[in-house]
Image (tube, rainbow over all chains, first blue to last red; front, side, top):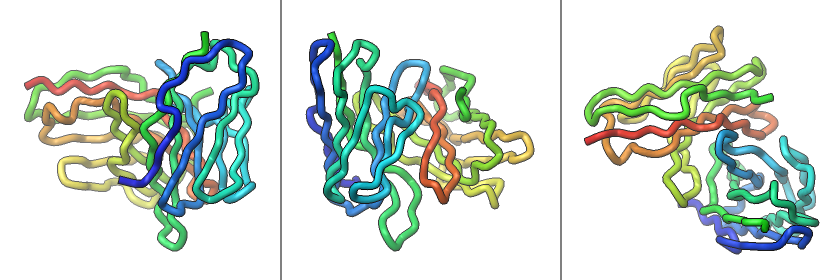
Length: 115
Length: 112
């Protein structure tokens, strides 16, 4: 299994509070992604990173920001959490440099509840 | 506007029979397709992929078929086993961009 961890694994927070989710990898993969999974929608891309300090928006980026200051860490921040951001969040990585692998490997997920 | 669609939310199959999961896409620029399996409370795991230069890729019990003219791919599982019971997601990408678009998933139940 690819070395991907997410923290926290579960979080309950109140509307309006800031929340940061962390993704950590030990695989030296170039690309890192944040997805949210909701019933009927599958996995939707929030933001992704193609290198340190290089990030771009996905399909559902409103209300979220990201940062990647090191290859191994990718942070997702909800500046002011809303109930619509209650979801399960998955981090993923892909493309080991030099091997051209394009499959994504996913972390275990973070269940976030905004009350 | 979903670019990748899985129109069957669920599928039930008897153990030992074939499971066929379907996926449609709208973006003709997609050139790489993948299937993932997801168990409850776990992250999705990669199952099998296919490049647009092929129309079939096989890995053990799993075969993916790609019909580019119909913008359709399918995953065949033969024979189906109870351990295959999971949610299956198809995904597509334009490989150079390394962004992936996922379908909404099909929940497969393989009955013993």
